[in-house]
Image (cartoon, rainbow, N blue to C red):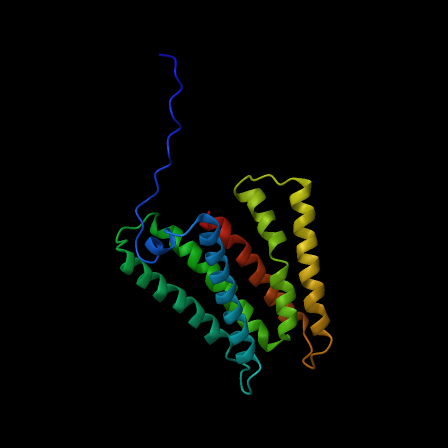
Length: 198
């Protein structure tokens, strides 16, 4: 008697779909593959969005692009849930409505704002969304951040903003105050999105 019991091994949820293949990988490789997938997906999204915004006749079509983005999220989310066999909702329908409104506001105002600003200006605003996201988290989820967290967040946002600012001065299209106001609203909506998800 008196011997120590062996530590229990955490039980992982049953994998479905692509997860069952990813779960066979070592954790570092698993994490790296997921990070690479996110970077590639967002890179392709931003590249295509910038290409569309520079096409002749784009002005006035930003709202349609925003709606299409939300529609794509809705359709592919449904396909993913059907593929893995998830038929029951995990949270109340009202929570999904809140997420949808934030996603629509973020995408709609961001794409509509492209009629009034150049694309590098949009990148500057999107690069700085970490700070309002932390501010919303502070009040909504009562999270506390250390001075190191705050300093790193400011440094990351400042670095990304300066990187994008280098292109801003070389673009012929002039950004307007109205366009930047739309981007600010989009950034605030985007700040609520991850906090509501949490």
